[in-house]
Length: 250
Image (tube, rainbow, N blue to C red; front, side):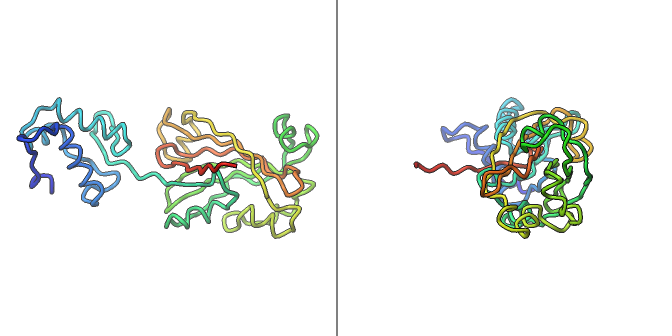
C-alpha cells in the first residue's frame, strides 16, 4: 500500500493525527483506496508510522464524522461511497436527467402500478374526495445499478388515467404528463424534507441497515393553474445522497 512510503514529520508543530488524516484523505482522493474497501487496521497503522493507537483513532474518528470513512462492527473501517450531489429539491426535473448530469446511469424498477382508493391524507393533498380513485405508482430508482431512492406517487385517476398505459421503467412521469398538454405539466412543487431512520422496507429495497439515515421528502406537484396532480413520498439513502439548494434575494 502506498501508505508505506509516506512518513509523518514529527519535527513540525502540526499534530500527528492531522498529518495521518491528510495522508489517508490523499489516498482516498487519488483512488488508491476505493469506495467500499477496507483501510489498514489501527495495529497496522501504528506499526507503520510508529505512533500510538490513540493518535490513529483520533484521525479515523474525524474522517468518519466527515463522511469519508465508515465503521463496521467486528469487521473494520471502510472507505465511504461518494454522495451524489443532487439539486432536485430546488428544481422540477425528472430523476433520470438529474442522474445523467452527475455522470451516472439511471434506471428504474416499478414495484407497483395500480388503482386504489385515496386515504384522507392523499385526498387532502390532491384536493379530491376521500375514497376517490387514485393511481398508485411505487418505484425503486438506481444510479449505476445502486439503489438510491424508493418513491411512492399518487395521482388522481379521473384526470390521469392515461398514465396506466405507460412503461415507467423507461418513461419519465413528468415527461408523460407534459406530453398531454400544459394543464398536465408539473410547473411547481411544494416539498417538505425530514430526516428519519431506515426501516425494514429500506433494508429490503435499498440494502441498508436498520436505523441508518433516510432523507424523507413529501412532495406535492401542481400544474400551471395551481391544481395538484401529484403527491409523492420519497425515501433517499442518507449515506449516498446530499442535496443542494441555491437561495437568491428577491
